Length: 112
Length: 116
Image (cartoon, rainbow over all chains, first blue to last red; front, top):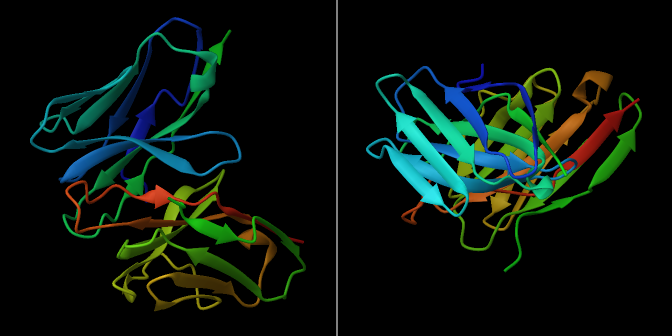
């Protein structure tokens, strides 16, 4: 079964707008990760946030983690058409093996 | 630096045939994962290896599926006999659990399997 649940399932915005995707999970985690998948390609790692961190930035990406609510959000600022992809959150309940469980993903479409 | 390499990229086969998917992980990585992606079930972890040893194969659907990792640079996922419901994208991924960012896994481009 899927650990993470992304919300919304699909998001359509205009270039330049911000995109926010949310992820909820059920069990305790060591870290939570966000991945991106372009159509027909493999998943690409975007950012990892550890359970003792609350916020992390990487370029136009901002990730927050609330372990009390078992939720995370991914914010993409100043979106571009090239950001069009599916975004997945993944939870890592094990410290040593990176055995990730993925959510169903959010399909983001950025219109030029 | 080469990423995770999978072959074949695309395969169409007839029901009942044996299918072998191959994976070369990133050099130096000590964990390897096989995932399956379908529209209905999303991404499912089938099996993962650590230091060439299968650690958890609880995601392998049934006895028709088997995976091996004879050495640190090669793994196979075999389906015998294949069925139409096995049609999916199969991803291999690897990670280095010794590094500080352990937990981050690196995916190959996938093997797109169609069983007719």
